[in-house]
Amino acid sequence: MCGIVGIVGRAPVAPLIVDALKRLEYRGYDSAGVATIDHGRLGRRRAEGKLVNLEKRLGEEPLDGTIGIGHTRWATHGVPNETNAHPHFSNDVAIVHNGIIENFAELRSSLIADGYEFASQTDTEVVAHLVSRELAKGLGPVEAAHNALKQLEGAFALAIMFRGDEDMIIGARNGPPLAVGHGEGEMYLGSDAIALAPFTNAITYLEDGDWAVVRRGGMEIFDIEGKPVDRKRQQSIGSSYLVDKGNYRHFMEKEIYEQPEVVSHTLAHYLDFANGVAKDFETPFDFGKIDRLAISACGTAYLAGLVGKYWFERHARLPVDIDIASEFRYREMPLSKQSGALFISQSGETADTLASLRYCRQEGLPIGAIVNVRESTIARESDGIFPTLAGPEIGVASTKAFTCQLSVLASLAVKAAAARGEVDAEGEKLLVRQLSEAPKLANQTLKLAGQIEKLARDLSHYKHVLYLGRDTNYPLAMEGALKLKEISYIHAEGYAAGELKHGPIALIDEQMPVIVIAPHDRIFEKTVSNMQEVAARGGKIILITDAKGAKHSTIDTLDTIIVPDVPEIISPIVYSLPIQMLAYYTAVFMGTDVDQPRNLAKSVTVE
Ligand code: F6R
Figure 1: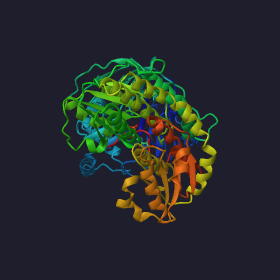
Figure 2 (figure 1 turned 45 degrees about the vertical axis):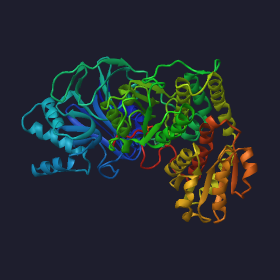
Figure 3 (figure 1 turned 180 degrees about the vertical axis):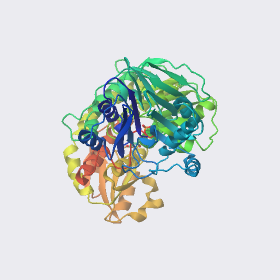
Figure 4 (figure 1 turned 135 degrees about the horizontal axis):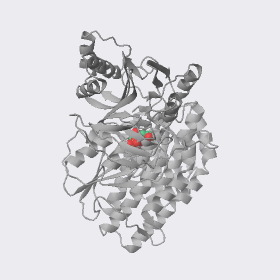
């Protein structure tokens, strides 16, 4: 994670770097820093915590200089304080880094043995000293950086600047993304194109192993052997506008409320509502010909994939293997050559998901990706992408990206069902019509906000919460628990309702509210039995259901949230909203930092 920026410009760069860092704050907000060189002086300002602290610092003590680098941090090595904040210096070298240097311990020992003193606990400082040691051997900056890069193991994106050369930043990529931006007499480096969007939309993406020498007049890219390589320049579509919250208190609230609209856009991208068919869009594999689908993703995106498994298997009779990407990549799963591989990622940069993709690439599988950021590494390395049309998601806890991922998966399941002859024209039409109702029903569900807000006040007094669901509501139970714990810091777990009696029931008492997600479907009665088991042990139930479910549950609940009646296929999309709202309002009552919860980051580019 972490976001990095570098500018070789014509005017003072510190304010521009801060502007770019604002667009990268989603990558981490433990600390931030800027360094510039001004007439031979290397200066830096750093601050613990969010970027506003750095801005304040720069307001008090501005930095001049037309060349500079900047960083927003998600801590890996060393606590998030000012000393560990980037940029890190070693003599004439200044450096910012995103990623992890895996061999940092041995490099650090060898540098200490050579007399280098470490000011921080970070792995990054090793790289600064390493370049410095190469300079001390008499090499020029470019050769010194290249020699240092050859000694690094791990995943990194770096920007390196040298006092003594005010016209050069060296960028390097091995894993996390790095883009070079081309301006008029100025050049830029950034973790993504959006960071650079106010300055330029002419972008060159570095590939793994690339390093670039960036000067005002242009740039050259080399591979790790030092041979020049050609990387094409592209027009980025990144928006230069910082998305704002409008009248909402938090981005998360705004993003929850945007869902009817973005779900509608996403569904309309894949489905022809007028003719009741899945559109004829390009796919990286033929759903009619593959015999299995391997899905992998992380966190919320993984839970979307889990819902997708139910849909693909039920509607298209297509077997799905679904894995958490950090497990998939190491478990050496045998993959049939007739399989398709599908990766789901909002950011398109998640390191474990990317590594799983590369594993499947090596195995020769055709690769598709459901991504929100179309210029991301995962998007670029896939054979075909299925975009979610959620727009930028700023809140760290995923909401609209999740329901848009569900919308894509449901649409793909319909397409697969048709391609495999598992639905006839009438069946396809019915599914498409049902999906077309999702935005309207999601909108009606948002009207439950008042009731959910009241309930959240009660929930905020508990320390533990259990979520239960069956079928597609099982992944939703896990998603509800994930949302609650990540933004309110209340411990929560999601279980398959049928698993309750195999262990978690031991936890049930009056201090453990149990949130049951159970529309009145064909297995509703089974879930009612599980609720009886909870009630018999003094557990407090919060039931999320529809009118029929409320009528038939016959169990005392702490509260019952009645969602509009929905067709089964869109139930996960619509039922996502009350669980998101419950987590959101609970966090608001707890007074946590909803959009930027502690310890998290929006784009997880470390393994
Ligand atoms: C939770 C959340 C995370 C992400 C996960 C994967 O609210 O947002 O669990 O879903 O880090 O991120 P992407 O989708 O960017 O690969």
